[in-house]
Length: 149
Image (cartoon, rainbow, N blue to C red):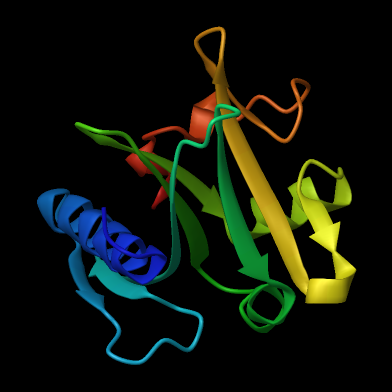
C-alpha cells in the first residue's frame, strides 16, 4: 500500500474516471488550491474536493477537511466527494458543500479547533452509511451521482 499522498491521488483519479464515464468533461487540477477536480456537463461547472480513506480497524473511514478550504469554497457549485476505499472497489459519498455545512452545524462532523480542521467519519451500519454517529444516515448520498446536476 502506498502513502496517504498516493491514496489521495488514487481517489482523485477514481472520481475523475467516474465523472468521465458519466458524461462529464473532468480534469484533475495540477495545483491543489482546495479544489481537486473541475468538471463541466451541460454548460454547468462543478468544483470538487476529493477526500479518500481506507477502512480503519474501528470500521470507520476518517477524513480531515481544512476549515480554511471549506470557508473559501462554501458557495457555488462545490461538492465534496468522499472515496471509501475497499480492497476490490470504491464507494463514493457525494455531498454538496451546503450539506457539509449543515452536518457541521448538526455536529455530525466534528470540529477540531486546535488543528483548524473538521473530522468527517463514515461507517457502514445495518445496510446504511452513517456519518458521525448512528443518528446521521447519509445513505442517500452513497454512490448517488445524480446529486451532480
